Image: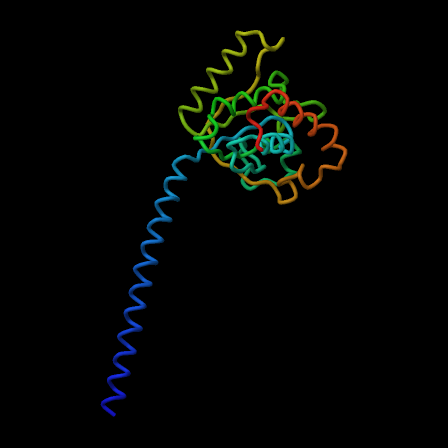
Length: 219
């Protein structure tokens, strides 16, 4: 019986040793992962652009190197949790926008601004092509003072340069809240590229982006 008891004690000791070894190893791995996540998060920033139909904005910025994700939604209005139908009625104050997260080590806010202004017409009030209404206005909702400073500076420089025959009407306002659009609006071009709007409105914008910004296209 003593012999069996010793075997049992030995077994328990081995099991405990394995447990603590695994526990330490797990703790070390978690610590490393946490450190990597913190490092990565420090390089990620967010910008919110409105440049007409969010399907177009989403499709263009999805092509850009350094952009981590693009989500379509609504911002700049007063109605909570608006629906697409409500926003289209023009009574919510919201603009169709895209919430763009990007890696600052791969692309700068200046570069994002350049693409923003060159892939839509920032001189038409509440209109982009045949899409018209306050929800289609050109807008930058800045997330910090640096974004505000750069956006206002860029807008002023473009107006002074005479790059456009008419002044830029892009509104530059502080970001308050972003409401994601319905699921069927997300990743719209990639899921509906054969539709007429995608072929005749979105595709030309993507081609323009790839032509002007060859060095900024994802590979």
